[in-house]
Image 1: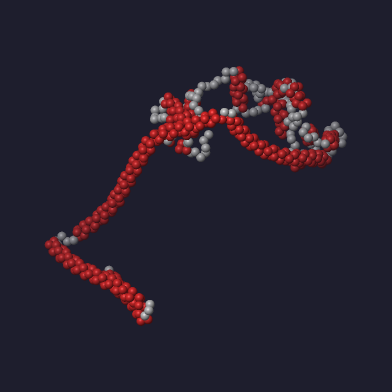
Image 2: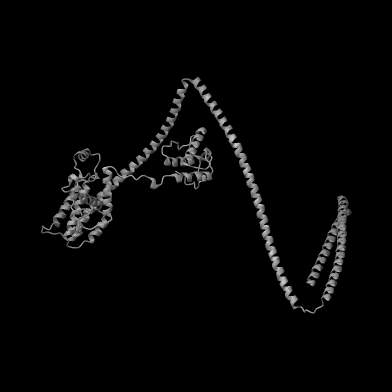
Length: 532
């Protein structure tokens, strides 16, 4: 049984892996004798894993397999082993065919084949068949009344139980002819299923649909009423005698009036009224009985729930006391020879500690190379990943560069084609030396302009240096003067006024410098726009 949350082999724990492997091996080689439950002891776990590995090797598994495959399995190795075991499972075609050997099995097989053959053919009445081959096709439908235990009878009635067990005849013995057995069973089941009276509304609707002056309708009503009375008399809680007698009188009265031998024939309305009164009385009795039974059921449900709660509490208390009893019994057994038991217990504890230390040392011996191998593999993987990432980045850059070069090449081709068209348009008899001379003049002019621009830029840098130097000197001078005047302004009124004037002068000068810079910037932008 696998939990619904486990969707792949990675979710398998060690116990589930061992259980799956043992189940497959038991199907492949019955009687292997390996436990499905993994023990808690590490040595026993190693033995179970080694046994599973040996069994798989004997079956022909060629991969690397050992106890670690099942105890510390990876998803890949586990998938390989389970796929190998699943392929080794016996196929449906390899299973030996179990043919029935006893007479009873042969009889069941023969009956099943005959029933299957007969059920595959459509049903027809016996008088529609022209041949009798393949069964009793021409048998008429005759049934007899069966004597069977009533389902509503009280099982605690000892007399009825003795009669049913010791004296009641079997069904074949009750038949006058064996051909009536199956029709009698079918008729009894049909009466049990379909002869029960419906509710009052359905009965009234059925009466309204009856044809007028129908003798068969009166006979059917009489039979249904008599069957209803007989069925009510068989219930576990009988009706009061007065009610039963009243029903019998009414039914007899209806039968007498409905009999064709009588001269006085009641009308249809009178028959319907009698039937309605009879059904009302039955419904009222049934309602009272149902209410009484429902009350008893409610009381029994309450008692049952109380008994269940009490039983659960007692079971819990019993379990607690049983555990305490076991502990006390074990303690009393140990107290008989307390000193020796203490020595034995200390020896067991010491052995357990030594065993744990030994297992821990063994685990460390196995663990150290595995951890080293894991770290080496992880470093190799990280190195490979970094190398791959670098190569991917280089590849991405090369692709981008390739796109740029392709675009540049496309532009060069366009320029080349454009220049070629212009060259083709030019006159062929032009003096080339004149163009060369003109190009040289243009180059000289450009060189002169570049020299002048360099001079202007050098002057501009010198002026900017002087401006920066003067600005720094001005800031330092303002800071020194501000400190001196502020120091005297605390005691001298003239110094206080001078400090205010100094601050106003500094702010005004800053605004003037800012305005000059903005004016220069505006003029430069105007010049650039005019040139454009």
